[in-house]
Image (tube, rainbow, N blue to C red; front, side):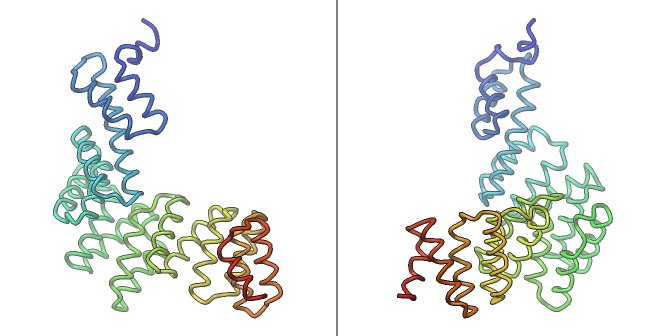
Length: 302
C-alpha cells in the first residue's frame, strides 16, 4: 500500500478535498466534503475524517468569533462539541459563542462541562467567575477570577486590577469590559490586542483602545499601522503631543505612509505648528494625490 493510501489519500475524492482545504486553512470549505465522508461510513476513513471535521468546525467557529459572527460560531462549535464532547477547550469556545448570542444558561452549562472535564482549566475557571460576577454574586465571582490568575498569570496583572478597581469605584460596566478582554486573550497574542483595540475604537472607547494598542506595540513595536491607530486614539483623548510622536514613529517605520503624514499634519495644526502641518499635508498628497484629509486640510493654507 502506498503512503498516500495509508493516510487515506486517493481513496475518496471528498476526503482528499476536505483534507486539502483544511491544510490550506480553508476550514469552511473543508466541512461539507468531510461531512459526506462521515455520512458514507467508510471504515477506512472514518477516524481520520472525524478528526479533520472536528478540527475544521472548531477553527471555523473561532474564525466566526473573531469576525463577531456569534450565531455562525454557535452553529460550527455545537457540531464540533458533538464530535469532540470530551474536549474542554471546544466546550469553552462554544460557551463564549452562546454568551454572545444571549444564551446565558447554555453558556453556563458548557462552562460547567468544561470544568467537569478539567477542574483546573484556567480559562474555564475565569469564565465561570466572570459569569458569577455578571449574573450572580460579584464578590464570589471576583474570588473565582483571582483563583484563575493563580493557575495562569494571563488572567491577573494590571488589567485584572484595573477591572477590580473600577468595580470598587462603582463603574461595573468598565470593570466588565476589562474582564471580558482577559477572557479573549492568548499569551503574547498581538493580533488579539489589535483586534480589541479596533473594537474599542469603533465604540469610541478611546482610552480602552489606546491601552490595547500599547500592549500590541510592546510586542511588535515596528507595526506602523498600529502606531497610527494608537496616535488617532491619543488625538481623540486630546493628548496631541503624544499623538504627534506616534505618527512620527510610524513614518520612521514607513516613510510612504500617507495616512500617518496626514494625521501628523492634523496634530501639528492643533499644536499651532502651521508650517510643519502644511509640510506634512503636502507630503501626504505627494504620496497619494487623492488623500481626502490632506487635500481638505491644504485648502486652509490657500
